[in-house]
Image (cartoon, rainbow, N blue to C red; front, top):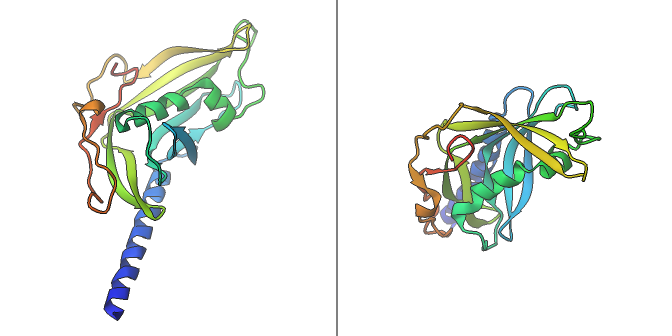
Length: 218
């Protein structure tokens, strides 16, 4: 009985360290000058914890930047209405929304200059990775999916933001890095992936790397 208890304790400690390790690894990925952030986002009726790196530059003092590279964890228990293949696409699209940028990530005041005013538009850069995978993990005392990049392929999109006469944000793409259309190292589309249902029997199962489509690889 004592040996059995020791095994359970060791297993619990291991799972805790794996969870902490994932969050520490996400934070360690942030470049100098960036702040690690974990944001809660509603995706298909479920909450995902999304790790990103943010650099907020005050209006007119350089570009604000967001690196969407840390990963995302489905907070259990929840069964999303959105297909797992669309989770990464949805998270990226929301983070790249001007309202999300200025209301949540970098709440400047004023948030962006008028499009017809004397001040230039604000510059925002987004870096997102083009190859992702999903893995079954044990998190919050349950089994769930963890989405993370799986490769060095990335796209950096640079936008100009301003506010039109109706108070709506105008978003203009001015540059991508790498320039032009690139071919990522992953070749499978998200809809072709059979995502594992999180359970004790699928713990540790990982999908192949699949493509996230950005302005660099439409």
